[in-house]
Length: 260
Image (cartoon, rainbow, N blue to C red; front, side, top):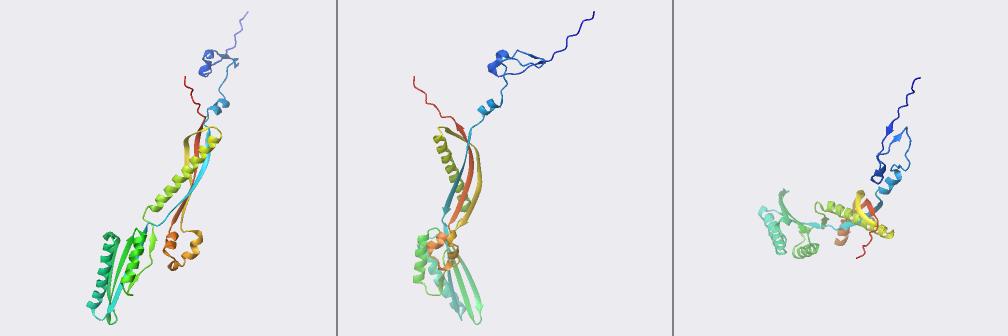
C-alpha cells in the first residue's frame, strides 16, 4: 500500500501596521485570509493627505515719472564770427550760472555747441539739456529763464520719463501686493470655517501687464504740446498689474491647553 503525498502549501507573510504587531507571526496557507488582518487602504491614505486651500490674488500699482528733461536753445546769426560767438556765450554763461545758484548738480546739465556758416553770415547754436528730479524746481527755473532772457532763447516743453529699473521694480511691487491680497483672502476663509492657515505650498504668477497713462487719455496724448504739466505727468505715469495663484496648507484649529 503506497502512501499519498501531501500537497505542498505556500506560505505568504504580510507586514501590518505597528498596532497589529501581535499578529505579524501569523501565516496564510493556500491563500486564506486571517481573521482580523487589515491592510491599510485608500481611506487611511486619504486621511493622511494634506488639506489645502487654493486662492488667487490681484493687485494694481502705479508710479509717476521720477525724471524730467528740459532743453534750452540759444542761437545767434551775425555777419561777424566773433559777434555770433559772443552773443551766444554771454547768454549761455548766464544760464549755467543761474542753474548752479539754484542748486543743480553739474552731472544734471549737458551743454552742446554748434557753429556753422549760413550764406553770408555765421550762425551759432548752444543747447543746454537739464535733468530735474524735483518738478517744482523745474517750473521755477523755467519761469525765471523766460522772464530774464529774450526771444532768441527757446525753452522746450518738459519731457517726463522713468529711470532705468523703475518699471521692473513696479512689476515686483505689483506681484508682492497680489501675494499679500491672496494671503489675506486665504486667512479669512480659514477663519470662517474654523481652521488654521498653514504654509504656502505653491505660489504662481499667472498674469502680469503694464501700461502708460490712462486709456481715456489716448486722444489727448496726441496733442501733447497742449497738455499742462500735470497732464503730462499723468500721461507718463506707469501702471502695473499682477495676478497670482497660491496653494496654502490647512491645519486644524489649535486647541488651547488648560493650565493645571
